Length: 302
Image (cartoon, rainbow, N blue to C red; front, side):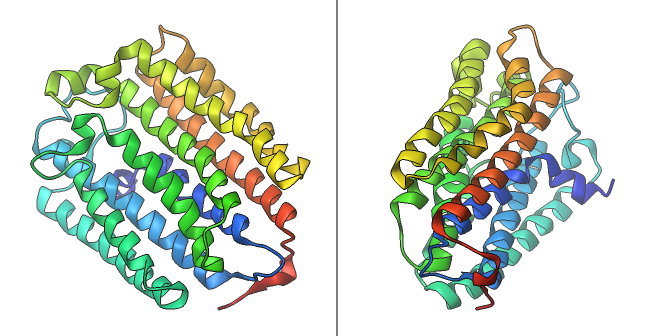
C-alpha cells in the first residue's frame, strides 16, 4: 500500500463521511433543494481534515517517540521510517490546503461565516497531537472528535445546504458524534499500555481499561437510544431504520465488552465500529431524506 494512503488510516475515514451524509439529509426539507456541489465540497473539507489529523498524529507521535516497536496496531509511517518527518509535514500542509480551498469555495456559496468554523477545525486538527501541550495527551481528544466530527460536521453540512441551524440537524449530530468518538475510544483502548509508557495521557489512560470499555459501550448505546427521540420529534417511524446497523456494530461491541480482548482483536473491533458507523449513517441519511421529503429530482447543482 502507498505509505501516504496507509498513513491516512482509511479505516477511520467513515468518521468524516458519515456526518456529511447525515447533515446533508437533515437539511433536505421540501423548501430546500440539495446542492450536489455543496455536498461534495463539505465532504472534501471533512475528509481532508480527517487525513490532516491522522498525518499530524503520525508525525508528532513519531518524532516524540510515542509510537514504538511495542505498539500493537497498524504501523506508523514516521516511526517506521516509511515517510521522513519533513515529507510528512508537507503532507499535513497539503491536506490542510485542500481543506482550505474547498472550505473557501463552500463559504462563497453558503456564507462566509463558515470560514470561522473551518479555521477552528484546522487549528483543532493541529492541536490534537501538536504544539507544546497537545490536548489528546490531556484526555481531551474524545471531546474534539465529538465536537468537530459530530456536532460541527453534521450541523455544518446541513447549514451548507439551507444556511440555517435546525433542531433536527442538531439532534442528528449527537449520535454521529457518539459513533465517531467510539471509533477513537476503541483505538485508544488498544494503545493504553504504550501510551502510558510514553507519557501520552489520553482519556483511555486516565479511565483505565475497564472504564474505557464502559465508555465505548455507552457511546454506542446513546447513538441508538436517541433514535426513538428523533422518531417522536419528526413523527416518522422510518428514523428507527438505523437500528438495523446494530448487526454490523455488534461484533465490535461484543469484542470491547470482553475484558480479555486486546491487540489484534481490538483492531477488528475498530474495523467493525467504522463499518457500523457508516452503515448507521447511510440508513440514517436515507431515513432523514424520507422524513424531510427529499426526492432525487430535488437535487440542484448550486
